[in-house]
Image 1 (cartoon, one colour):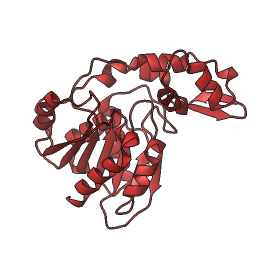
Image 2 (image 1 turned 45 degrees about the vertical axis):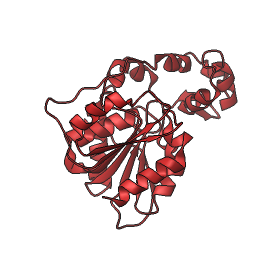
Image 3 (image 1 turned 135 degrees about the horizontal axis):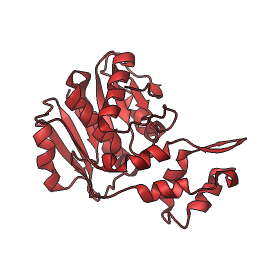
Image 4 (image 1 turned 90 degrees about the vertical axis):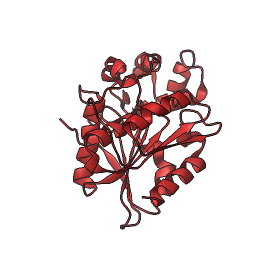
Length: 260
């Protein structure tokens, strides 16, 4: 059953097909803040928190079919029944599943640095680092950053992870349902679609040139499911492509939207 996603709407031109943006694992809608505002020049942009993330409801189900149902429900209720869908990483897989399950909802598909394949890596280390925090000792994000330093040496990754904490006068709490996310990790790094599924609509895959998530050998899997897909690579960009190379991602996205 679909959950009602928390969303932020950036109002733009009324005549453009609205755009829905879906974030990745352990992210939240506000990760798209700058990009969503820039894209709203031509259309309304809805930025959602995915289930078990941010301010959206927690639920025991954490499959791509379930996430696709959430996105479909939001488009039907809030966006006139049809939207362009932009998804990064986990959100990109959810967007792909939506396009395959409910193509009538998807006017165009934009997938940022993820392919329709099963991966072998895991994000359990990051989740376990967050779950290991002593929330009673955290009064500000700097406390969490310091506590994570040994387990997560990379400063940028720590800054990303601490966004999963809600800091309030009465204490800290988790914004993400870490127990469910950990339990669903095999599903989240995996990929399953109904046999014979394909989506014939326009699709853009934006890959980071320095990322291993969308390799040249993955393009066959992309085009098997999305025969009209175009794959663009942004040089020197890693997995968080929209944060590392925002102008390049903005330009590619605008060109795609203008061509619909």
